[in-house]
Amino acid sequence: MSDLYIGLMSGTSLDGVDGVLADFAGGAIQTLGAAFVPFPAELRAELMALQSATSNEIEREALAANGLAAAYARCADELVAKAPGRVAAVCVHGQTIRHRPELGFTRQTNNPALVAELTGIDVIADFRSRDVAAGGQGAPLVPAFHQAQFGHPGQTRAVVNVGGIANISVLHADGRVSGYDTGPGNVLMDLWIARHQGAAYDAGGAWAASGQVQPDLLAALLRAPYFALPAPKSTGRDLFHAAWLDTQLAPFPRRAAADVQATLTRLTAVTIADGIRKETDQPAAVYVCGGGAYNATLLQELAAALGGNVPVQSTDVLGVAPNRVEALAFAWLGHRFSKRQAGNLPAVTGAKGLRILGALYPA
Image (cartoon, rainbow, N blue to C red; front, top):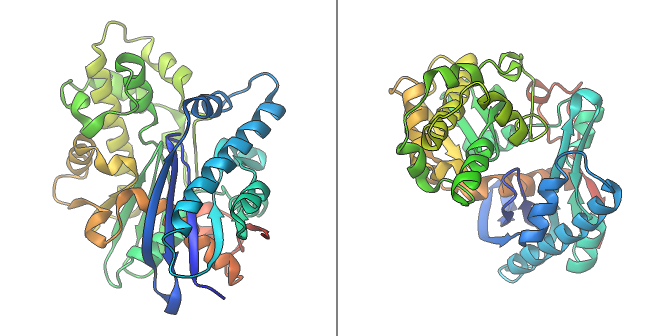
């Protein structure tokens, strides 16, 4: 059987599909190629609308899933063209539109049957639902991959994924792995700059750097009940969305927009740092992936929140570009599924035990 797998990820930032072509021959993890397919504006708008209750949801979700499948297939086709041999499977996460593990479900919109039809390749999808069925959060699923890719015997490291939502993986020196969603990653910063400047994100954190953090606003934001919840825990746009932000800002009128952006950036940094400190006193280093790794202001804030004595670097220094890590993680999870090996970590998700994650849609 081929050891080539394609991993596809579209996350809470809703910008498009990140894809990687990975080779797992001999037990190693090697990235052979990468691709990105942006979402058409109308698809992004529809996926954003589906994040909350709306009219005619069943039909609208089904049509959005078809649009997603087409984007996934385009990204997969680009990667197949780079493959030195037959690709065993396309491993696709789907687009989260609801995440309510406390109610026993998580919803990743997708049409994996259509992806299989369009690509002519086996598709592995639906990675989260088995963990939820076993009493887990279904997220984060990346810590097991982080351990496989970035773990270092005898050294405690933290890996931070900053997409729309931020999650941490603490890779302990003794081999244990802990982690969870810490709260907002880019989601609130992206909402705020889109509203005030029409930009999709704060490039390099330049706008945040032009503002001043508002301590009273930050203190109010940090009172959100989610931050005090014990692990295991996970979250998404179900909680941290535009209406939530507006409610938090209502008691603080006439604050400069740049100052709010600076405060939201620090909120992300402080909650990540708090999460890491709850798991380990002194990590040897913190490695950041996801879109947030390209936000220099956020990385500076995170380093400061950790006390200034812990190196904070991009996963680039470990050989994996920050925007490829999550897609590579789902290629790894798909490979695990093919070998009928567990992909979750019960200590992270809270599931009753190890579970094989995913469902197969044959070509």
